[in-house]
Length: 298
Image 1 (cartoon, rainbow, N blue to C red):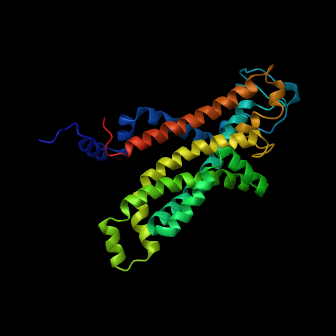
Image 2: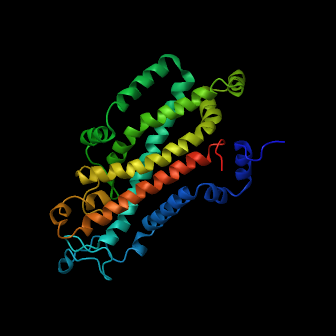
Image 3: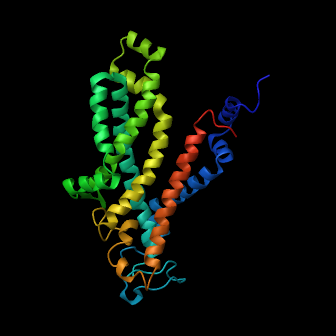
């Protein structure tokens, strides 16, 4: 008789349940992260309805007001409601995080599959270039890209900022996808596809790509947290989102540094928002990694 506690049995039992129920049962901490991510999405998508004030409204009569029933998280040096700016800042953080992660992960995944599939000199050349990118700290590489590209604002977002955050992600996802591709490129069904005369493009995107989805999703989720933190860092340094756009990193810079001793809430609450968002995505990413692993044991 097969042991009912074996990982394969546990995996089949989880697959028989509704995915959300199985995920919540086996990964409670990941579900907590997912719930917070959903709250962030709701806040970002419906900021106009959730925020009690206009995030750009200046009220000099309420400058540096302490948290109260009128202003739950106080006001900044211009009398703007901190809670409303955090709500609208969620939209900025999620937009930059998802767009940059999609761009970086997508390009990196294609590079990783191509590198592993063709091998030889192509693989060597690509891997050496990825080594060069990996040799730079993420923040340094992002700063260099921003400095070279400059700013290109569109609809409140800087497209060059998204590119600058996406580039440091490319070599990491390329390495992970390359490893997954190396494990399956020599399998019989790949050889059968070649024998059937399928093009390399079809084999890569039709037969290899679906089998590297799991590691791709895990890295993509982790990159969103990284992108949110990187966007906040660049905005803090004045190289990311600029005034008057509401952004968490931007709320920590400028006049906030001059008044934080007498009004600590102007940096406390944006810092908490950044920390909780990054923590939530990391929790969800780690849980997703365990959930997608068939060897996971309840």
